[in-house]
Length: 327
Image (cartoon, rainbow, N blue to C red; front, side):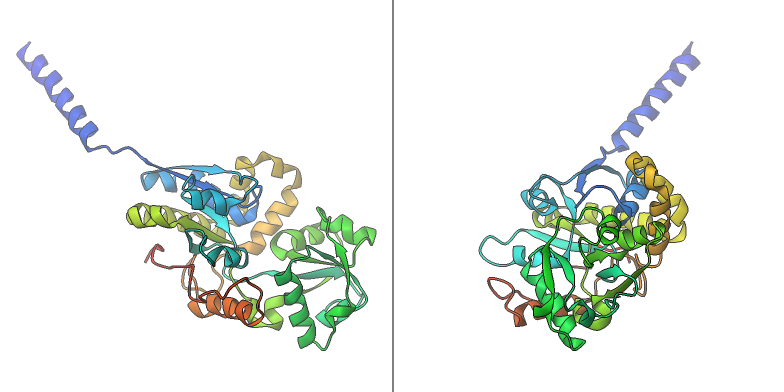
């Protein structure tokens, strides 16, 4: 009986010590910029493969509210979100600047540009003259196109601007309702490929390096980052593992994404092809996933200042950090 009691006491002590040593997982919310797509794959991989859990994190992935990811992160209701260097710029100036910082680059280079039907002369910016371009009527957007057209000897004033209602680039180009669309190649460009639509395409960054800004990025709430630097590092390290997995295993990563977002399964060919494309873009020529090049970040904000595209001047070095990235 004494031996049995001793054994029971030993078990109780072991479990008590184990419970004392166990800490509750840190709760983190990350809000997407849009519905789930291959830009987000590393997030879902980190969740499915247990990278967050291994880091002591309980991570919830949520859809953006009407005000966007930036508003939710700035309010502190989410610790992290997905945003873009260009759209952050106007939010970084003035007395009501939002308290967020870009902490990781999802994709290393800007892969956006203009797509058009093949053989209609829009393979370079000058070819947009006299053509129908689907515009969002944004000052930065129009100045970007003006810039690359001027570099190519073209005149932006000769472009026919059509208010954009495009939700499906393939259908819009096939119908002839527009001739040219600003796209992110990893999704819309690949969608045209998988649909068998022959296209011409040029990237802004190939014409003027100032447009090689960061899009998309992971942002964090400033106050939370200041108070929880080690947790922030653990989160970014888990994300880095997720995106690195996607680089090395694009098909398996695409499968994980589609399990997390089953609505994508109906277009699995696009998801697989997009994931294969992004496998070489997440890190590209950087030394590691998530890294910002300070000169490239500043170059774009300097361009915004030169073109007076913001209500006030922006500090070109403001708004990003590499301090939370793994060594």
